[in-house]
Length: 325
Image 1 (cartoon, rainbow, N blue to C red):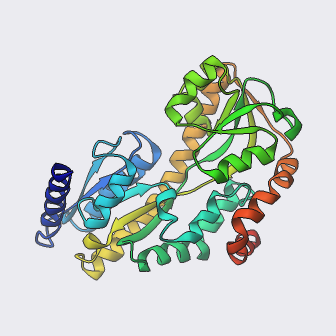
Image 2: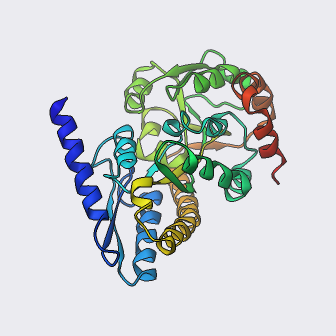
């Protein structure tokens, strides 16, 4: 434990010293758990290049993709103390400080990907970024990133909730997500992502849910999940944050430049994500995966109790989200 604390202190000192340099030589350290070439990584790399150009080389980015500096929880802690300056993270760790973001985890809270994007691009998205920035978390909300739309992939075709009866479906380890699958008609099983391939192979589970790039890159289709039912039951954005320690060391002009570049990264990542989904969908179809288009309403109706259970305290926010066109 002492060694870990010393390492964290050293990393913190390094980050602070890097940022304490003269204004003409600022190095922003950015981290992402996704690998090099992934849409979020490419978009943030582009953000760094734009800042470099906008500041005549005064601000430069160092990108550390693929969890090379540690897992997400550790990276959030390092961002909070200023050892990491910019971080793309999932919403799970943000929920405890800005509870409203938990709304985005609920099934069918968004009607479509276009609806989700309209929400995060508009006043609701900005309000939540501002709440994070004003919270005690020592993080500045910069922008939103697309995390994709999650749908079912199974060994047997699913077209209606009744088709899920008796099927064991892997879900992320959150009671909300397990309850969602149970309400949809299946048997939700909380399981680590790395266990899914062997669990499909051995019949421990009958399917899982995720986006097309994940289905392809994890090779889950090779373990028998040949049917992709486009339920789009979860559409969960991700968030780009900056250490408040680092942000407060910037001049107002540089702060504005960072936020502008981050907003552009939000839109750049979206185009990259859409291209990736199209690419991997084509690859999956070439491998024999059948994409099934369905009427989502029966699944939406079935999950109403889940939204009522987990969303009661966010009723007003959910109404605002629903009203967005």
